[in-house]
Length: 357
Ligand code: DAH
Image 1 (cartoon, rainbow, N blue to C red):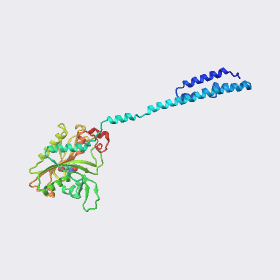
Image 2: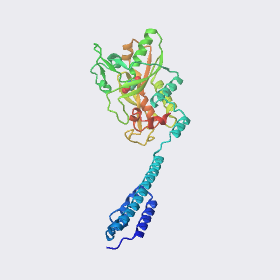
Image 3: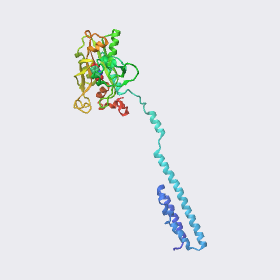
Image 4: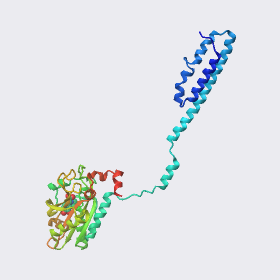
């Protein structure tokens, strides 16, 4: 065993202190701990050599060694506190959320005002176009009886056409069947009944509103949707008047590069009847998923008022004639803004809604 050497105590201490001061982080300091004061450290080696001394010297040397270790331990402890404080301060700086910044950015940001949804603003624009063509705007109830939604429109019970308008029935405990209207056409009946009662024929009106069907939503259908109905009852009205109104409307609303066309169709309340379609605005007529590859999108139906409807409301079809049309407001919004999937209109996704402020 080599003899105890006091000078080695000093050099062990100064190298340990150097190492402590050089440690740049709490982790680095902890890692060097073994090396400085552990079993293989110079202090441990010196401790072992104490045995080579006589009792008196050993006591003295032991005290010396102990004091030196004590100083190293204290230096280590204070360096540890220093390092952990500065690390914590750095972390706080990184994590800090500056409330002053938040407050001032809020204060200077303009207040975001709300705006109408796409369907509501589309409805207003459609009304504007028709008002410009001389129509008035009327309202009708969303909850109807079987009479208004079906029978007065020449759709008797068990008529196969009812299948086109399957709906939600309300259990109101009345003998009469009450339902959520499947189209805006029943409003025509209300308007004609009222005009007959008040003696205010002719009628040139559009009737926008919400409708309901037991439809499975897809890219072009929603179970809750909106239509705008048109009704003209006057003397000497012909199919040419109807076609002219549809064409004028299409150009005014969708622009000159979108075409409309009428295709023969069947509706119990009009004769003859037609479906009116416009060029698909998503693909400009090329054919896409939205228009089922046809290049055309159906907007609605139209036709000359059936004498059976005139009879139901007490209008003399020898004196009066007229036409009606009804089409989807949501579909118009979809086509005007090239929304490929109509479900976006009712999903309330702000990223979608904010595009139409
Ligand atoms: N009510 C029909 C529907 O929802 C659309 C319609 C067709 C309305 C012909 C009309 C009309 O006024 O004349 O399917």
